[in-house]
Structures are given as structure tokens and as C-alpha cells.
Image (cartoon, rainbow, N blue to C red; front, side, top):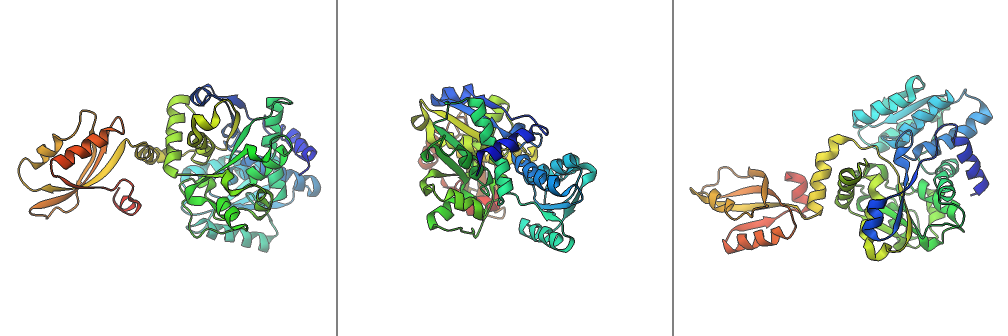
Length: 416
């Protein structure tokens, strides 16, 4: 990657939007005893860094071939919105393929950004189906397929994030650690490529959700691996196969520089940043900040850290689920299946076991026809995790038969 090409792309990009802020975050800096800078890609016009790669891809083709070309992409999220915004900017026609299951909020935002220059087609229940439809469209019509991450021009566009970081920190003021979220790997490839020689290789930390760890798996195997299953909760980084170009560039790093983060831990970060800082993050946008929490003060104290916040396209209809996951991860909410005697006063006796900070959030009979004992699903919220130690001791002392199913993924997915 040629830095002068990236610098040129960044300069040209200023005609579309100003550089995103690099902000010293006082809250996180105080928590970890470090200088924590956030590169706020959630403040781009489409609330993610994806506009960068799309702009760089388009500008090269439009400058060479004019505006008569038609473009096509497949995406259910940030790539579609960046694509649509750039189509309108250049005045070119584009077609966006999205799964039928895409939330209306994302469809409408893509339509708003693209206006008359973008057509949206809903195909299939899953991304793979709409991706194949987009490829078929490109082959039959001659439209240009705009990939989300596995392309040299896309990578060059994402590298402008790093060019801005260098300029914003100032010459000779390099960070000790750069924390990067990873989905398909375009952002990580661009940033590490530009910062090579400025930040040492061991100064990078890559973050993936546990349910979509394609980079970690590929680094471990020494080849590109396609995951059998992907958890789509962190939808902006839920990629089952790292890009080929991206893996080739990132394979120089050891696998232990990839940190896997649980989806529930990411939810804690989303809630914390919303409540404390008033910052709205999507799950993928919270990855790098969740990594800071995993490193803790011991791993960060005294360091200058840049964490890339990749996006803020959060659908607030997901907030109840995010809050639920965050409370479970923080130990503030648990679910139990109880065997409760079917006799007068049994429920009152159970309620007397609860502490002053314990609150029943869910109560449901699972087997209503039971004669002697009934199975009950109960969800309990509390103010401090240690309260559950006291509560379970009270259950045991009372001879209550119960099962804690909070971390039982099979049962939780079925009945919680």
C-alpha cells in the first residue's frame, strides 16, 4: 500500500465529508489510567467508516469511465448505506440487494441516502442468497460489483482512517496501542498497512465477536477458513470468511493478537457508553471499547491508546435485548427453574427468601397441570452480583429445588 495514494484519497474525500474526530475520552482515560482516544467513525455521514471504501472505489471508476456505469452491492447494513450515499454523490445508478429479513429502519436509511439513484431489491432470507442475486445481476447486466471489504480500492479507502489519526495526533506522537474491530478485515488491513513503520506490529489489537471469529480461526489454521456457523448479533462484524486480500496482509500478525469478545460483554459496553457518555454505538462499533474493558487497567495504564469506533447504526428496537444481555453478563440478572410445592402459602414462603434489592422480572408456570410440585421459570434482577450468593444460600437452606439456567444457551434460547 502506497501512503501517498491513501493521502490523496483522504484529501479527495474532504469534498464529501470532513475528517471524523479523534477524541480524548476523559471517562475511559480515568477508568484505565491511560490516554484513550476514540476515532469516531460513528460520526461520518452514514454513521460508519464504510463510506470511505465505497467513495474510493467509485471515484476511480467514475474518473476513468464517466458516470454511465451502473453499480451493484449486497448488504443489510453499513456497506449498503455508504454505497447509496456515494451513488448519489457521483450521480450514478446503483442497485442494492438486501435480505427480505432486513429491518425496515436499515432499508429506509439506505433509500434516504441514495434517493433517486438507488434501487433496493429484497431477495432471500439470508445474506448468502442476496449476495448471489447481486452477483447474478452484475454478470447479466454488466453492472460493477462493489465488494464490502475484499478489494484493494476498498482497503485503500478504509486506510484513510489511519491517515487522519496520524495527522490528528501530530508528527512523532504515535500511539502505543491501536485497537481495531474486525469483520471482513478491510478496515484492519488498511489501518495496519498505513501505520506500518509508525506503530510496531505488536502495537495492534484486533477484536472479533466470539460468534464470528473468522480472522482468529484463519490465523490459527494458517489459511483462510470459512466458519460453519456465525452468530449475527454483532451484525456489522458477523462475517463467516475473512477476505482473501485481507488475510494475506494480516497473516503476519500472531493469532494471540486477536481478542475474542462475548456478545453479552459487548452489550455492557453499549449500555455504559449510552448511559455515561450519551454515545450511541452499534454492536460492532462497541467491539474496540469492550476490548479495553477486557484488558483492564493493568493492561492499559500509562499507555496512549487509539480505539476505532467503527459505527453507530443502532436500531433502538434492539435495546431491550441489549439491556437483558448486559445485565446477565454483569451478574445482575439470573433465571431459575424452581420446583415449587403446590400448596397454599408456598409462593409467599418463596417471596420471603428474596433480599431487599432483589426484584422479580419474570414469573411463569411451565407446567400448569402439576399436582404436587410445579415447575416455574423466574427471572430475578438485583443491584449487586453478590446478592445472588445470598439468595442461593437462602434457597439451599429452605430446601428449595432449583436450577440456574442463566448460562445454559440451549434453554435460554428456547424460553428466555
